[in-house]
Image (cartoon, rainbow, N blue to C red):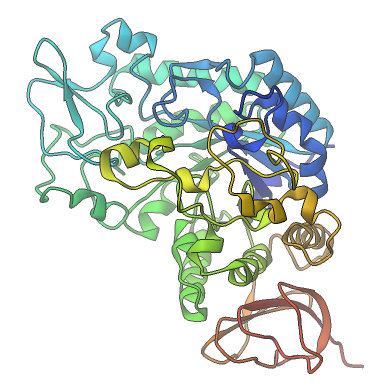
Length: 501
């Protein structure tokens, strides 16, 4: 049922944020049994794999990205037995399982940190000027006067990857989960781990470093030495059958730098965040698509496409409404390569902007005032009562009753059924998935793409309806179409080009 070793090259991967996906025991927190219970929903949606955000033992200072035990499940999410049952049932449903790996830092509750094994972390007598991604200094002082580095929250001390024991530990962690049947890893902060020799100052003014990330070289990210780690990991992945893979979360300064993470001796993929950050405009989308495909060609690996995740505002809100979000989704799913979906986007959920401050748990909010909690609000399953939850850990807006999976189930025009139709067609149509694309002539506010054989994608980001420029059968549209065959604003259409003769 899962025979294709190259499955990841054009897969549709669905990110499950376990805490917010589905709750099986009524404690208000999603869990692994909740995911397992919703496998029929995921199978009908048509995804090829699920990516589980961290479910490991954790004090939850950063939503599970502060790991205290990399080889166990936190009791709030269940047990290792629950994980094994989930993997077995997911595979039985024809869906693969990717898990998050957090190698840049551990929790300060990890046994190493608690035992005072400072050589496995980064301690020094004086701090430098590095700043935390979450705001404030990246250094915290301990009782004897030394300081430890934490590029994120103080509860997340950075590991010392110059120590061979750290490297050996993570090679073993990879094998632990591969032995349990996982099909791949999403590498958190894949551009981290290795720091510049001597830990030199950045020299930027207070608060400026966060603005530099992804645009400029800094001494704590994207150092050349990180690639040696992945060259150690790739043979481990390749030694297991079934096409085990790894995808990098890497914010780097250029496409050329990102391309270095991908290849036959390193990782299989890297997230393409440029597409997620593009404006809803034809020119912005085309610039990103052309750059991403060129970059993928240089390394011989397909690119990835993503519109929303657990760290960024949902694209319904970011792009300015549901119509635009649906149009962007149909564009994304028509592009060559693999696509990553975020749980709830198939319901058209917007960002929740009015959560009470006292309920927010994101450490970025506590230190910097920015919150990612708005995209982590639990999924509404039913249209009544608690929407499938008992006292959810973050409140679900009452307006989401109309967006619940139950409310959308039998509505042929719902966002849920649009996603189902798009994913089904992506599997069935020979033009979709892998391959190449051809740009067709189009007005400034319009994208027109042809996928061989004969699938034409037209995206209207302008303010007036446009004619598609080709004749053919409408296979799918992100919104209603008028009788004159034009494509309205904020709409994407998939057409099967008519043949002549």
